Amino acid sequence: MLAAAAVLALASTAYAHGGVLSYSNAGTWYQGWAPYNSPTGQTSIQRPWSSYNPITTVSDSTLACNDDGTAGALQLTATVAAGSQITAYWNQVWPHPYGPMLVYLAQCPGTSCTSVNSNSLEWFKIDESGLISGTVGDGFWGAGKMIQDNSSWTTTIPSTVPSGNYLIRFETIALHSLPAQMYPECAQIQITGGGSLAPTSAQLVQFPGGYGANDPGLTVDLYTNEAKTETTYVIPGPPLYGSSGSTGGGSPPTTSTGPTSTSSAPTPPPTSGTIPEYGQCGGTGWTGATAW
Ligand SMILES: *[C@@H]1O[C@H](CO)[C@@H](O)[C@H](O)[C@H]1NC(C)=O
Ligand SMILES: [Cu+2]
Image 1 (tube, rainbow, N blue to C red):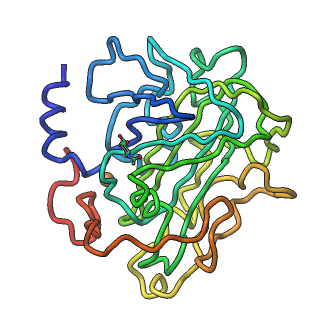
Image 2 (tube, rainbow, N blue to C red; image 1 turned 120 degrees about the horizontal axis):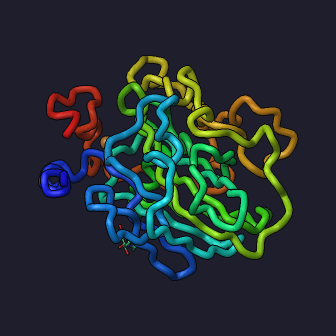
């Protein structure tokens, strides 16, 4: 119905926004859902999603998986070993280098996630990367590392997670303009060979619900004088799974003085000029279209 018009629009603004287009795990490639194609006949491990546009309201009903929360008619599930790496690939080249990367899991009741609405699930965060080096105003962020790594993000399924059926939610948040832009997509996985460490209640959130409109990590202004010297950034969402003695109230702040828990040494920022600083998404100085 709207497919032809949407494809034309997509061709002219291919790099403005986007989402996760595919995944890989243990040498297997998984094509994602194609949001601008007809849903009819689409088979994917990815949950359907509907728009390349960002979500900009924390109470948005699509915040879990960028859609109404239901599975596809021909929904697939990938079998993924606990302890293995899974990679999500965004459209090339992802245009927003300023902001965090976040990965969540949510366990489904029963023997499959397919009948489960993602809005009913409780999510725990298994990976996050905020400000890696430099300042809030002009630093190297998780999203910059994602771009540097082929517009992809690789995370390890914790070996301690109980086996079972899960949705995995990869998210990047763009902070180049306010309100912050949230880009989440989900895939359906069955984790095998897992452990026995369930997330604590303080580590579990629902979407919407997991983020607050006034979260410092979603309201930070990159263009203030303070941002030019600030080296601490508080990643939104619950404390990381596996962290001990957490009391809730957000993750500990990351600072640019060292690598985050799961990453290796900070990599240098991309060569300046390769990424448009405010890229076509309503950021400072952008005078072109902000919607399509
Ligand atoms: C980079 O990502 C694309 C998908 O966006 C993939 O086809 C390609 O194999 C990746 N390249 C490397 C070196 O991983
Ligand atoms: Cu965008």
